[in-house]
Image 1: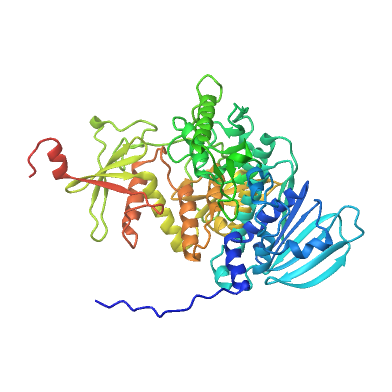
Image 2: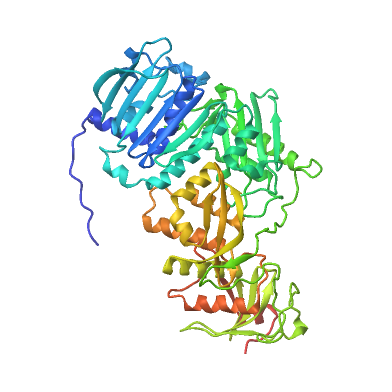
Length: 597
């Protein structure tokens, strides 16, 4: 056993001011998206009605934020980039009634410490705009030039003097998606202020000023909320809490929890307890793994809200938060209660996708209107559509020959349109049809980089949110390689002209929207290989056989045979769910009080 090395004693020293500033900046500036958030919130506090954001290289080369607010006086410009200098409060006691977005006096100072910052501002009535330039925390230049009233902040070469932080950032394309997400959340918190996002390719998102939370929610979360939402309003009941919410009916849901936005006193926040309260209200109305979408806007007595618990002001602490969450849950639950017109059970949607035509070299596709079920011997008369397997029908098990050391299987048939029942030499085997198919598609995509595509006779129009559009631009090549073909057809409308197909089974057009939502989640700091694997897993999920699909015995056998041919062990799908469960003959005998042979 190696003896621990005794550390050498070192003296306690004061850190240099530049080092302190860079460490503090790391708490506030996480990446271009956090830069945009801080600067937009500053623009709000300055009374802006329109804010324009421009990105270069995802924001790492430059983030420029222009507003039409009150501006900064020339003499105050150098002070604005000093630490703990702010116009939001003068005494500690002011924190209890704070109604502004910023208050710590760290945002501009932190940006100036880890980037090259240019600050230009003109107040109403001034003849010209005055500006300063700061690099690595040091004022390098003061100047005067023409500009409209308001403030422009340009942040260039982010993390130029902290390369270690730059290495742990998203890719520029992924950061652009994150900026779009952040702007959507900010807009839902204060829809009265217009936000526009631009990049090298042109305008990426436009959120115009709106007095309607419903209108803002549709713009951020998608047109599916039109006619499929519930509008809640709860006045202050004496507790100092009121709220307004625009939430989806159970017929509209997402596969991730990122579609629910919460604001407290006009501040976009992350609140696990409040988000959990909303989701809990949907418990009996949404299946597991599905989440509601919408916006919740709470107005709470500022004395009950502590906004000083997180450097980026992303989280807040609310006095008696459990009571607030419980009241919100009960209000949502009441709105969903049968008889209110909101709680419509999720319906099984039939995709109205036109009959496809095969591209040259592509496999033929069976008609989607002719589902088949196991009910006859393999190679015998045609399968009977939609009829469940009958024990007295003598279906004649389809044999799946094992590969290498994997056992042979006798495939007996489907169960609940979710699982396949098979028999091996000494066990009963249950197979999850989606997990098995997903793993096969995933490995094919990772190995070859492509899936076959079926062109649609009539393209399907889809409306994308700003975030979905950003995810499409960031992952366009991978999505095209996976078999999707989607082309722009207007400001927010696209046309799906081709869908991926694998072994004769085609993905659906609506699946593309959920795929884009998943890809938009991204992952900060994830290595390239890990992100590519996650992206392939998301694509495979939407191109694979789904739970509830009715498929033939031959297709079941084909998927299992391909599963056997995979190089490595295939115990789970790429998302970690098990593919099969094996019940030994001995265990079955024990259950039925039999003696094992």
